Image 1 (cartoon, protein in one colour):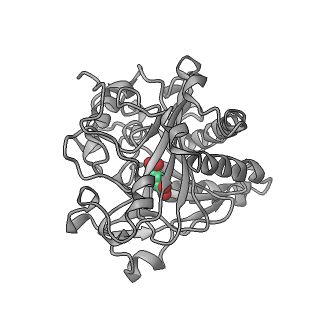
Image 2 (cartoon, rainbow, N blue to C red):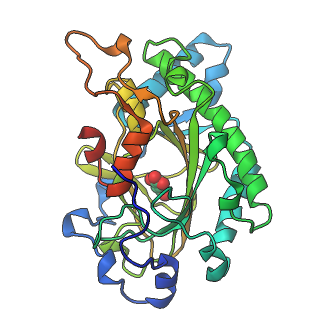
Image 3 (cartoon, rainbow, N blue to C red):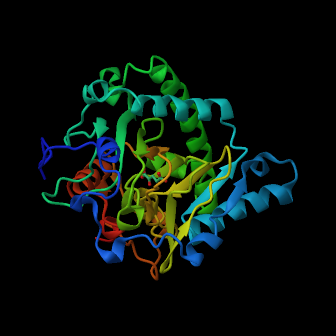
Length: 353
Ligand SMILES: O=C(O)CCC(=O)C(=O)O
């Protein structure tokens, strides 16, 4: 498969549309009826994903420790999503990261355009995912960056404004990598594997990490569109820093969409397709999407913790049994990601294929 060099149509920034279209959205953003959010559904709003206090992982009380491991295990199996509090990342740094990126999106358009991206690597300022000509688009802009491996980290692609952006994101990346490493150990132990199993399967210290900062401008008709279409995350594990003032993330639970109520200073963790493969589907990546909002803009930071891109990822031998054969063939993350990037967000169809 050859990576596309350019977008199939001229890029229009959703932020500009939000400023010019006060009453209605262009046809290109109107989703088919089956994909539209039912914004006021009771079922969507009464539930919430599990909230887990990570302090318990380091408790000297064995019951508290075991209970925290169990909560994470159940959340991974039943939801594929959970919120974590007391995770060790400085709350000031979290606020600063969000604020810095919000400032970026408020820079004049000509400054942001300097970083316009292409579908070749997606790095930079973007307004669509996928390259299908005539696709119905999502109501969001974003900024996508590689953080690891160092060979892919290119400061020229990082915004030079606001001036603190590079420094803040560097510090944020260090903290999030540490947190992901801790969670990978917990997931390995919960799967009955050696504690470094998942980390080693991802390439040891040689993993990949990237960030997508999503910017969802105000939308005059949120009931007709989506901020981000339904998808599962292609990588290993995602730490999402949501906007805790505005609900936007919805997670699929059976036939329903649950609107996540973010807890202040929490991260939202979700299992990606690569951990689904390694765990032979004991853990499953779960479809999620973002709804648009008519009153306020929203910013979210998705930090993707991924396997090294050129090592084959396949179900752990220990989790393959005569009655549970390997459900997936070996594939590198590079091969998988290329496939995803051509198609854009498509529910769970990618990993199931
Ligand atoms: O903004 C959100 O709540 C969801 C973001 C997300 O799913 C993503 O960036 O992959």
